Length: 416
Image (cartoon, rainbow, N blue to C red; front, side, top):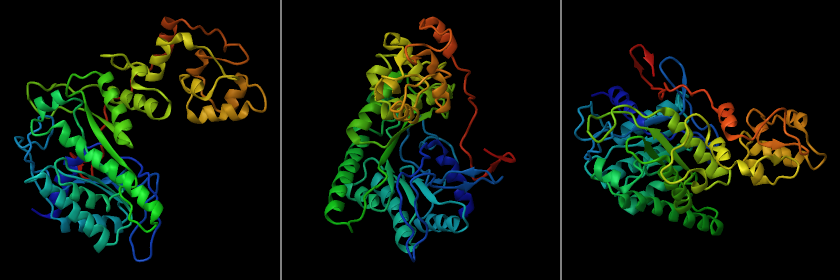
């Protein structure tokens, strides 16, 4: 099998792994090295029809010793298999970079032979790219659960970001659908990466020349809809991952039916559910909410409105909020008002009291906010705080549900 065929198989196999983000790390160009890393908008690649995609996102191999029922690369699935050598993949990546197709690499892998063997191969790729080719740009690599801590440590010194996919929201789900995996095998490398990042920051304070360890932090991915856990269970888990492991991002991936296994749904969950989880995740990270505030036990997110509106209707007694006197976190909880708008409001009202015309001039979006705020004690127009009326006004049109990750290769005449 030639390298082009391997690339076709293994870039397509990687499309189920969701982790395309800005790098969160800046690294200046160096004489004698290739590339640099920017904290935002890290990578570009191109589909066969010229459309821009984020990363060269590829698996080292899709041969797998595990039989996770939700995974397209599971051992029992009859799919086309391929594996690179470290030299092949490093050469492809550097040639793509030199042709201006990409600015970075997202590297994952199925488990071939053993976790240690797989981690050694990923380490070998990064070592070639960093040391032989002097690549100075962004690299995101997967830490393989069950691999030796020394291998994970060595790889972390060559990567900008590492991730360990937790995939399913509970130990019970793992037992049913991924019997080769355990919660402990997944969380152990998360804890290792966290402790190494903390230790490395202390070393850098003492020794400025100390090599950086995973400077962009770690992330993980949860598959949504493969099992019956509620959105509250998922949000609780995400909150714990942020608090316990200092996770930079938790990614949510709507399950795609890839198996006839009787315990798996044969219809994909609505992609809108994935979108709502990202919105709830945003409330956890930037808006001062905790999981118990967003949802009650066993509760799901409302697909017809964003989570902040859902929360506001359940806590209508906290509204209206007076724009000219409310504090930072009070304003953040107003539906439709984000962090940037809150800062504008706080700065502007130092000079004078604000009215609705002032808010419009500040580009504060009032489409939803107008129902929950007052300016100088007055609400905007004929608004009401009746929850049933507000529910009808705040219900959104459904977001389109057909989208897929772009591919390097054309399928049926068009890249997908």
